[in-house]
Structure formats: C-alpha cells, structure tokens
Image (cartoon, rainbow over all chains, first blue to last red; front, top):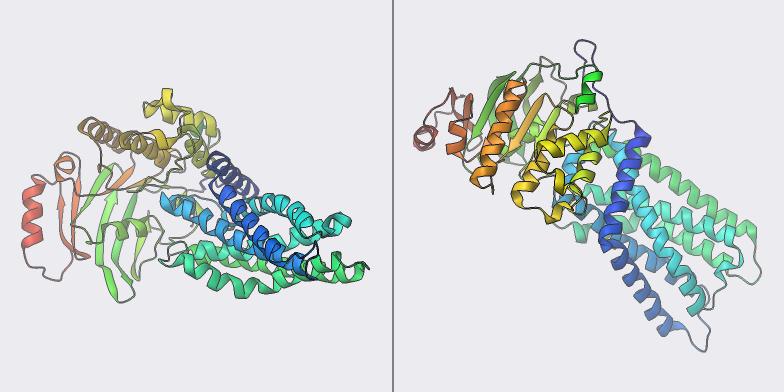
Length: 237
Length: 248
C-alpha cells in the first residue's frame, strides 16, 4: 500500500514471524498432544503389522526395513499435515494469521517447521523400532542416516504443508490431500528408501548414499523455493 | 497499548470508500454493485438476512477476498493487498480467531507479536484488564464462556489499534450484560476515531448504535439510511418491497 503521510505501520520481520508461529504450534501441540499421539500410534502400528507379516526367523526381506520405515512416515505425516491445518480452520485462526501484517511465506515456514518437528519426533521412535523389529543396522552410520532422514522429512513436509494449506477450505480435503501429495512426493520417498537401503547394505558404499542425499537436497531446495514463491498467491483470495 | 504511542501513529486513513463492488463465486453472484462510504468516528451497520452478502463484504474490506469488479479505497488508496494495509485493519469474526488450547494472555501476546506491537506482554496485560479478565488471564480460552471469549476476541482485534474495525455478528450468543458492555466498547472506539463496520442481525442493539445503515438483499444494496431509527420497521419494509435493481 502506498503510504500516507510517510507513516508506515510496523510489520513483524520474517524470522520473528516464523518463530512465533512455530512456538505457537508447538505450545498447542504440547498442551493437546493430539497430532503427536495420533501420528505416533499410527506409525508404530504400521511398523508392527509389517514386522509381523514380513519378518521370518528374524530375517526381513532385503530393503523391506527401509521401505516400511518410509511408508509409515509418509502415512503418519499425511495425518499430521491434515490435522495441523484442520486446527487452524476450526476457529478460523488461519484467517487471523492471514490478516496479520506479516510476510505470508513466514507463516508457511512456521507451519512447515512445526510439521518437521513432529515428524522428527515420530522418527525418533520409529528408527529404533525398525532397527529392533527388522534387525536392520540403521544406526551403523548415524551421520548418513541423519542426513537422509532430515532431508527426506523436509521434502515431505515442504510439499505437504503447501498442499494442506491450499486444501484447508476444500470440503473433501481429507481425500484430496493424499491424492495431490503422493504423486509429487513419491520421488522424495523413493530417494529416502534407496538412501536408507544403501545404509543397510553389508558393503556400505558412501558414494551411493551421497548420491541419494544430494538428490534429496535438490528436491528440498526446489520444493521449499516453490512453496515460498507461491504461498502468498495460493493463500490470497 | 500505551507503548504504541511512542511510535508514529499508523492510523492514517480517515475514510473508506466502497465503489461498485461485486463479487462472484463461480456462477453465483454474492455481491452486486455495492457502494458506500464510512468515515472516521462512524459506525456503519450492514443489515440483511442470511446469504445477503454481509460476510462477503466484510471479507473484501478485510482484504481476504478481492472484488470481482469495483474497488475499495482506503483513504484514497485502492491497493487492497499488502502488510501495511492489513496492519490498519482489525477483524472480529463470527468465529473468534482464538486458539482454545492457549490461555487468554498467550492468545493476545501471540497476535500482538504478529502485529509488531512493541511490547506484546504489556499490551496483552492492558487488553486483559480492559476485557475484565485479569484474573482469568492464564486460563485456557477453551474454559471460557462465549461472552468471555468474545471479550478476548475483541481485544485481539484491537490489540494493534486498527483504523478500521470489522465486526461480523458480534452480538451473537451474548447475554444482555455482555452485549451492553460490547456496545459501550464500540462507542468508546467511535469516540477515538476508528471506523467501525458491523454486520448484524440484532436490530434492537443496532438501533441505538449505528450512524449509518446499509441494507443488503440477495447481495444487492436495498437501502442506505443515515442516522437510522426504528430499524426493525425499516428492515421489514426494505426487505419486503420489490428490488429496483439500483444501488443504495
């Protein structure tokens, strides 16, 4: 808006807005535990069912542990994404966020980091569980594992946060979110599965893991930049 | 909000002008060629039955929706996007825009922070005192009655001292005492020079509050009356007479 009389109302800077939105989301989640418990319960159930179905005499099919880990994270993440924005819709607080004089992409980043935090907390439980049930030596290379897990989670959350925000007013949002999200995020999940599977090989090859990690970093950069670029337009009107 | 006085006063537009604003959702026209002006220290009421377009009009004034045609001018400026304009607008919706899991203080501090109020904690304390909720400041909003939540929500909408305050059915669910307190607060805001636009069904309360009434019917302006009196009679008359297809 063109300023009148040379006076410009103060607006919250980007980083401060991100922090406020993130802190608010984490506070609400700590009080209710709603998303964390649902996500964790679903993910653990998923891993347990697959473990009982696939593990025979203590041996899982090759690559099974990596695939099941990321399927559980993807499905649990979809639940978390839907609920995170449903919460903003119920009391129309999303409108209040959009009415605030803040850079709207900062709202996206705050919500996105909240989802990442929730998913990382879920993964902190899932990784030892998969390690135990599938006798998969996931923690043999903790640095590489951390890289794969964090980058894959960022890719999933970056796209998912964007789509969940877009669909917040859609009547069939629960059905539409996976329909829109999965085709876009499948390359990220495949890279995550391949990177994790490479970590579990008896002959560990850092070059292979590095390739998948770089691919994931590329996905992350593209998805985050696209989301930041389009969020304002998507949330307007 | 006393700390606000130390910074340049951001409340620098003195009127809003809605010019031939229409808004369609797909093939459905929610608003059709609505025009009006509202000035400093004025309370404008938007009256009409459900589906008349009142909430759509408020959403356009709040910059949440763009008009399909026509424009809104804020003190002569027609740019309806941008953080600087949003900093001058406060909205009290029918939904209260509060996080039920957070306390009243946390809600107010959060929104004060988003609006870059210099000392959010101090502003929240003052707002809680104004709302008469100082003793319940640290209780979650989910434990509040509708009237108490409404008071917190009004203070949330005012925490940044907006120039333009938009209220959508603010009296719904309030008992007489809470409604009277809200009326008193709105009159106080009028005295301080804010522009208030209220969409309401409550004609008895509106009767003693409005400086100007705009009647909407099927998204079209059916009448516009300055210093309205006996609103219920006027409302019934306006809503039953044939629309001429013209403006207000």
